[in-house]
Length: 368
Ligand code: ATP
Ligand code: MG
Image (tube, rainbow, N blue to C red; front, top):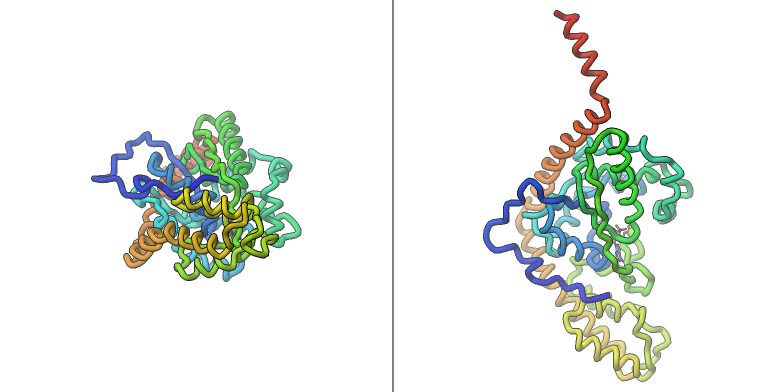
């Protein structure tokens, strides 16, 4: 992994008025299910890539609450959508997404996407979907012994999200690329059968391994309780880093330690802005000339240097009451407008509008 600190020019708003996007600017779509605040794993795995890319496109960021229902559909889960969506958007903006280049929208506010998903579902087989390993993994993760029907359809609904806004580019984490493959297949199949309506979206893989958790497990994850959140206050970061898992074979600073795969050094490498300090710590760790306490103290300081500007922007954005809500409302309206247009085009291309139009004409002529 390489240091992920985002260059300031990628975060600072472009000077002067936002450039006119023009009608042909390609579209990007990506997003998350509203399941909680964003952590360092989200930053490394997807957010950094989004921040780097988003100004080149008309960028749509979906808050995929309908997708959340495929594994989390209790009343409490649903009641949490609002605050969690607001937190996610706030975290994303604080981390560096520019609202002038980003459309944030709530999936359930665009019900036409469900219609498109239904129309696309006749173009894919059940065995094709059953072969996708991430779906079985998600079912297991959610404690489901049998595959819910909605979860099997997850990639089809995701294809509908992507194709509904005619996205050309979809940045994805490794676990999601198989879903975007389905979207590409559906676009091609639809276009062949009914006429060219959809661009075939290109995948932009974020080619980074998962960020390990503070407990040394392979993946930082909310539900594993091993995450450092972008919104954690500095003292909480210090406390979490102090408790972090390191090389268990090291009983004293004089014992040579292993750097490779050691989460403390993984974080140093990904988030520190001081490569010389990291190289020196590694050197001394390998030769038994540094204590874990110093390595961790420097890591907590590096993480706090990385998170400080994010915290500052987060506080400023949160103080602007109603800002995030307004972005979600206008983004959802904007997206709905686009999606309605696409679905009308799809229905026309399929000839689905013909029968009712014929009935209407006949009914009108009888009335005369
Ligand atoms: P949960 O515990 O509820 O599964 P989570 O913390 O694992 O939550 P998700 O909502 O599952 O987070 O993650 C959304 C996306 O964020 C993933 O598809 C992946 O691309 C990225 N992501 C999450 N955790 C990591 C991580 N530790 N390293 C890299 N990318 C990650
Ligand atoms: Mg997860």
